Image (tube, rainbow, N blue to C red; front, side, top):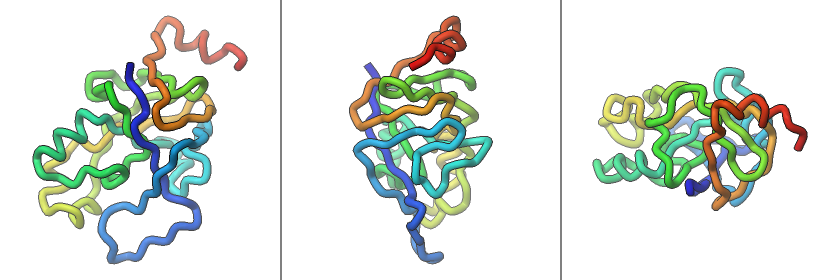
Length: 164
């Protein structure tokens, strides 16, 4: 069964020097995903088009094998999932993380030039391989090791309407 491998965020109080390399992300063992926002307390949350950047361990392993930096949070992702290749799932797929949180997969993330600071081959060399932009549909608490399941399309609406 797929599981949450990593959770990272950029705290609201965090300040990153303009000349620093990469993304400033701090690890969490658990977090609250807020519907329409993302990780509670995340400075990068609240974007109406994307609340989270989610990656999978399969893609990260491929990037690492090609010599790209691929540590947790290094590429700007918030959550890493193990046991699920997100590139095989269509836009709009719903995933339940832990007991209650539900996210909707959006488009593949287009990498920005900030990644060039980490590796001169980026962003072109990692195009469409740095995660999926997602929206949090249902608020819930998650933790590293929690199960991840695809919400079947026929049950998607009904399961989201059920009181928790």
